[in-house]
Length: 367
Image (tube, rainbow, N blue to C red; front, side, top):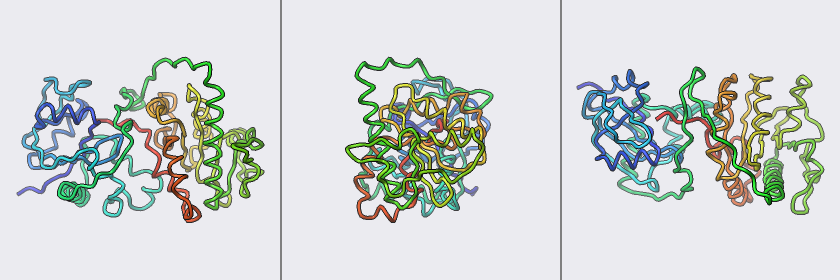
């Protein structure tokens, strides 16, 4: 008997519901994946991964060779490269298995892949063939979750459909629509939100024992009666010396976390409608210092999640080396606020890379 292969099968919440409504007996992929789909054989397992919430929601067993069909099953795209399947295990979004709970058993987290977020590259395109040991571990975890379900809360907004990607010579890119007009009361509210988040990030880094940099034009400001300049670990000068253009760009980034003489995280806060000035600074930094391997974060309101992802995947940012979506992650306001309220007494024991686990990849999933 031929060995079973394990394949990742990506679903949005919308396409998962459409798959079930159509009978749950056909899984499809984009035409561009036809060559890969032809490698899937009867008996193979498809591990169903729910994007947005980053959880494994089911296991499908392949029941046929690959075939082509344009009969409409999914609403947004035909996904004509198909295989017939049988549902082996089906979970709910609440009981689905978070991929991060499998970090101790999956090879995609080994080395520095977890701390740098490289593991996300393994869950961005389907079908993709996984190692047998990883596939077996995922299936075992999904089966255990079916037998002993554990409900894990999540933000329902994360189930929303992600921005649509378009193929191009640069890879998958987005074409964002026109900007909405800001309300007349927005400026003061957005300024307060920006200061609040900037203070939370600066205070969090300070309490973790890291040195902190606040944008040079903001360091004399205060939030809630607390001055940035009163933070014990606030740096008066940046220790890193680049060319003048790079130094001037770095000095204007909203918040930096530093350890000794190295930047360990850079944060741009975007509470304005355009979500653009911070991205341009990040873009300048990547262009001028492509080998500067530090995590970059766009911190923005939850409701702007899709807007941030769409902007990061614009052609102008996708052609950078490396592409911005590979090094820049989205951190929602609500996640930061919640985490700051929970870390409490153990904040001094946290390492800087814990923030990457809270943030979300900005890559466009290729279902």
